[in-house]
Image 1: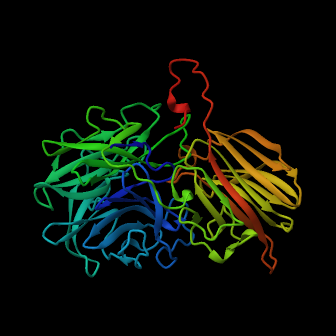
Image 2: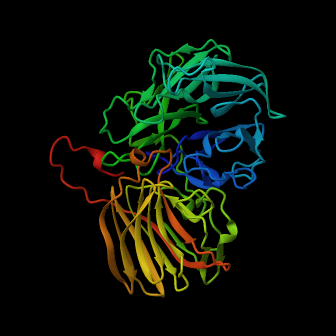
Image 3: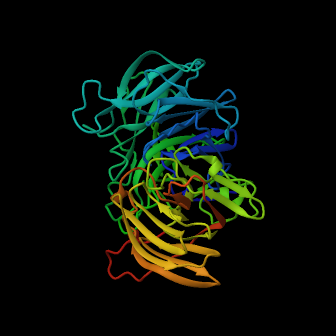
Amino acid sequence: MAVKASNPILAGFYPDPSICAVGDDFYIVNSTFAYFPGLSVMHSKDLAHWEQIGNVMTRESQLPLNEAGSSRGLFAPTMRYHNGTYYVICTNVSYGGNFIVTSDKPEGPYSEPHYLEGADGIDPSLFFDDDGKVYYIGTHPNKDGCRYNGDYFIYIQEVDIENFKLIGEPKDVWNGAMRDVQWPEGPHLYKIGEYYYILHAEGGTGPEHAVSVARSKEVFGPYENNFCNPIFTHRHLGVRYPVKYVGHADLVQLPDGEWYMVMLAVRPIKGYTTMGRETFLARVIWEKDWPVVNPGLGILSDVLNIDLPEYKPECRPTSIPGTNKLYDFTHLDEIGPEWLFLRNPIMDHYELKQGEGLYLTCSADAVSGYGKPTYMSVRQDSHCFEAAVTLKGDNLYNGARAGICLFQSEDYNLRFEYAGCNGTVILRKGGEDEKLASRVLPQDLVTLVINVIGTKAALFMVCDNKADVLVKDLDISCLSTEVAGGFVGCTIGLYAEDDSDRDEKVKALFKSFSYKRLIPVMKKKENANDTADGGDE
């Protein structure tokens, strides 16, 4: 019986997907940039229902992120499986460059990074050939000098996988399907039938993003262009189409021989992308030894019917993407793999105590800085949601503060914090804080709430079952890729800061955190030009 998969299959900030099939299990890893742990590992058996089973980079020794901006760190990973070993190859653009880590389990733990000397550029991938040879494929600047921004080449080089060393000479094999193409990137190498295929993105990870393919009967080429390139894109559908930026794809084959493709795309609302790049799925067939994506449709579909039995994830519900999340910290025994921290967190600043809650140590490093802030978050995965924290703040005075934050980057975020018996709403735009409202709050338990509907937010506190609105109809379109830039989507979570010079650390006590997806009330269209650009899922 077929299962229905809904796009996106991974909602929220899950960019640059790479997929790996092992038997009847499927795994996806995604870029995480300056968040820690790095490279989430998602698992499914039907391509429709996913769960997070771990992270690839879980130790600071694996993932140094000192002072990395939120869109630096880990770019575009690839996961592959060969002879009992899982290989993840990636680029840490903030430290060390391209590396490989390995594990005998998809969820890890993974080895320390094996940095590849001489592997310049970004977006590496591995290919294990039938004859036992292993190849590295990646991108780097035009060796003759870049004639324009994004003048890159895709190159291939053999790898000594036992010693994690590049061997032989690198060879530039492809620079994209279009003339003077910008940013040929995210290449993956496959051997299917008698051909080697390079599947790659081009046009930049924005409105002109596209998927292209080339093939050759020899691994080092010459590669033949597919005259149907790009084989998949949404750039021709207009600026108001509800799903955009389609590209950076990876292929996977099911046990029955069917093929599918994962890729990234975004879902703007009113022209603003707040959730970042998400993971989508499409069907693939082969005609004349070329891949055809979503035949008969040619664009992403909302739903796919997949000939696999339905899989019901076995992990805790909060590890399932695209679901409501409720954390009662007074009864929680561990911090799950779905939580994201900025850069290399000081884990001693996060302490769960049964019956009491989660103590966060107020850090001198602010969320809006480049240090190691006390901030733990989950991904925003819907245009409409409500998130809330309940905390006890009777010790938050003289510079100590804690609360809830909707974070796009160091320069663009929305904070609702408690300090000195006051609740304060702060919107940070372009690196400048603007205090929007403040209210005296009780010293005992208080709940701080951020309600988001599209590009508008309301912030209120709840005490004794009464809501007190501090800000409503706040424009948060600045928390978007279009305004803030970068490669990430928004996260939302808990934070604690202290800008005093006191010796004794102050701890904020959080009792709970919740994230609830909302169903928006759709307004009647005023004219025929009002499209789904203003809608949600």
